[in-house]
Length: 204
Image (cartoon, rainbow, N blue to C red):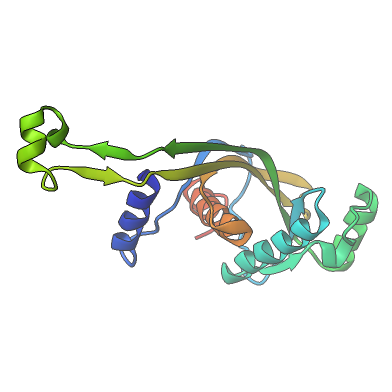
């Protein structure tokens, strides 16, 4: 029921504001970080995952999100391969490709909860014989029941400047019921974009 209500609210708010299910548990900004302008700069999208297909797909989605925000998003696997090389090799390949920065995402936790409503009869008609006899079919309701599974995914996002060789920003976010892998990446990317702009990491 809560999920259905949330969907209805989102539909009503379309065009007025973004309906996001992502919130931050913690964020960190480098004390001496200067606002960076990502426009037309090459930024690698790196997703840490032991599932190679999932990593490749996620990097493609993340690279797209970086591109629509003005950077030249590049899926990291296209530069360093699908099997992560050692840091020196990765750094050299990023340098050869003219990569200015790297955005890293990693799944930290995945929790879920299933709520089962068995359904059944309800209503005031069942309280006494008289009320049942007189009002049967009027106040009597029957629920067929339902099964609802809620998911919570915790994502760590890191933004590195390769030119400065330093971490600029880090955040741990929690997303509720994302619509698949692409939906998750978009949710987190939107939330991170708002947060880094608010904290002055990215020039407006």
